Structures are given as C-alpha cells and as structure tokens.
Image (cartoon, rainbow, N blue to C red; front, side):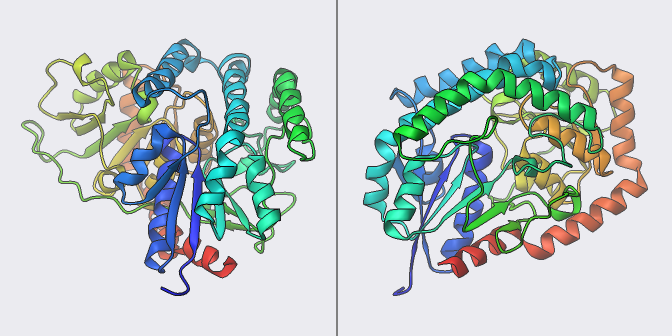
Length: 429
C-alpha cells in the first residue's frame, strides 16, 4: 500500500510484554501497515514465529540463545526462596536485583539500538518496558517520529498519590502501606538510580527523580489495564495522552480440550504460573495433588519441566505450553501467578481467578482482582488443602462474581484492545 507505514515494537524480553505487542502488531497489519520488532536475541524467534520481521538488539552481554534462556531461568529459580516473602520483603533481594539488571539492559541497548533504528526507519516506535532507552527519544527528536509507551504491567506504573506504588501489592486505600513501601524502595534503589542518571547524562538526557526510571510519552501512552478495574486517581489521566486498551488480548491458534479418563463432565480449571514460575515444581506438584482430588478437570502448564512429573491422575492434563487465550475462554476458572496477560485474559473472557503471586506486579494484580470482586488473592504457599478447595468451590459457585465478570467481559470485548490500539497508532501516524 502506498500509505503503508512502518511501526516498530520494542517490548521487554519477557513473554507478557512480547505477546501483548504481538496482539497490537497483528491489528496494525490488518490496517495495511508493516509491523517490525526490535528484540533481545533471546526473543527474536518468538516474533518470527508469528510471521513478523525481527531485528536483534543486544540488551546484555551477547551469548547463545540457549545460554541466555538458562541465565534467566537460573535467575528466577535462584529466587524461589524469596517468592514466599511479602512485596516489602522482596525489595532487598528480587526487586533490587531486577532493577540492577534492567538498568544494564538500557546501557547495553545503546550500543545496537541506534543502528537498528536507522536500518528499520520506523514511522512510529512503541516501547513496552519499565525503563527509558535514550536512543528512542533521540531518534524521535532527530527524525520527527513519535514514540509511544505501552504499559503492559499494572497501570500503577503511571504513578498517582492516591493509588498503590508499583509492585507493592498494597490495597487501594492503605496509605500506610503506600508510604512504607515507597520509602524502602527509594532507599534500596538509590545507588542503582544514580548509576542510571549518570548514564542518562552521558546520553544528553535529563535525570529522573529518585525512584523513576521512565516517563510518560508526550505523544501517547497505551495502558493494557481494563477500565472496569482501573484505580480512582487524584489526577485523572488525559485521554489525549493516555488510553486504556481493555486487556489487549492477542489472536492465538485454536485449542481442542483433551480427553480425560476421569471426571469427564466436571468443571474445567487451568493452572499456570507463567513461563518462568514453572520452575517451582514442588509447589505445582502440591497444587496438582490437591486439585486432582476435587470434582474437576485440570489443565496444568508445567513449562520446561515435564520430566519432573510422573504419572498424573486421569482428570489432569499436563503440557509445557498452552495457547493461553484459546484455553482460558474454554475453562470455568483459572489459578495463576498474576502476570498481566493472565490477569487480563481472565477478565476478557469473564473467568474467575485465584491469583497466587510471587513477584513483580503479580502482587498488585492479586490485590486488585480481589478488591474489585473478580476473584481471590491467596499466598502462593501458605495455604491448607481446605482453604484452596474452598476458594475453588467459591469461584465456581459465586453468582455475584460471575455477574460482575460477565459485565467486565462484555465491556472489554466490545472495545477489543488490539483494534483500539491499532486505530490510535493509525491516527498518530
């Protein structure tokens, strides 16, 4: 098409942001534009698997893909003892180490990103990350190209005095929790933040205030959060600069529910702790053992650890990967870790969820799903069989929850986030 534009997507090297960007890119191509991905080498093949052009941007010391995958799985698995801690207690370990690594991704990307942008020549750049990449702002200024920030985690990445701090897991009106978490977070990340501000100065960018590593785009910011669970802000977001994408659920291949040899007509549950959480096989085995005794059928995502599981009951099916949107729309309820994709997909398809968070914005989403009446928050390990069974039974029988979920689902599906995002980008172009 003569009016075809190049839309570059630069998501964080994690499946949540990656697959959200895929959903938006699919909708952009339906409008006749060309979507390309700028990608950490470890994720390049993911985008190519969906049929997109992808360009490598090293965001850490280069290493073979299998070594990179092992590095991150080792990083996550090494923190399993910290996953049972509160969000506040995780500041000194998981959160601190994550921000150290995230800052390094920005520093490393500065080596490759300018050349890749010059090669791709995008007409708009969509960056889904929690940190600024100076090359993007510089390219925007020099070439008159707008850049868009995509917020695929909880909407509290965009701060406000009346909403919980990002990653805190605080309840909406618990101001004492806000203050305690924010003070400790700033204390712990201060040296990391100073390192980042020094890097920004080297790149000719202005420093950020303590605790901030990114900014809102002056052009447009796309929040994947759905409006039915949005926070009440003291300073409302201007629709001219901020738009909610109502979950932004991507198109995925169809999934046929497998045949079960036991409890063939029982309610169907889906269990997943995401691509990285599957390393906690002891916890997943415990969950599967308890759930298999109930009058349900269970689909359980065990990631790359299939060999860790022996024979399973006849009402349980294990797989290393599921096309999640296609699965969730067919089940009756979900148990997950609070990743933003899982959080939004459950709401989009009107499915109740138990969220057992372990890190990052899983804590925020777990709190939010319960305080808005769309599911339950449970500690990932400190539960009894009786407590888990009770929550599952309540998910399957709570009429008020089902009514609220149906209303939220109708709202989200009527707006279809990827199509909305593509329309916004088209207007921006």
